[in-house]
Amino acid sequence: LFASSFRGAHSRLTRTIAQQKIRALVSAHRDRNKQKGNFRRLWITRINAVIRQKGVSYSILIHDLYKRQLLLNRKILAQIAISNKNCLYMISNE
Image (cartoon, rainbow, N blue to C red; front, side, top):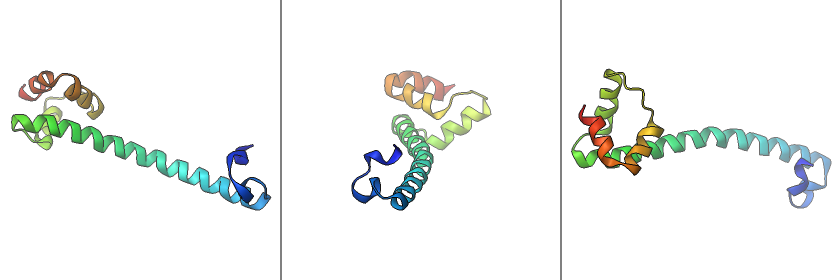
């Protein structure tokens, strides 16, 4: 059933079905972890693009947030940067 969508011998021959199943699961596991890093990179880029307009670098912003113990992760900061830039400017100024 797993290999029913594969093409050619990969869906008909027992040994190649087993090999392709292992290969597909390895690729899925690898790409799930890669996707997390890609999203983190996207969020950092979005935050940096908005905050640089005020003359503050990304690393300084994150350092100040940790010093003040503000619990905002990069995903939330990126959403704020897209939806409401002034709010992100207020966060960076405090």
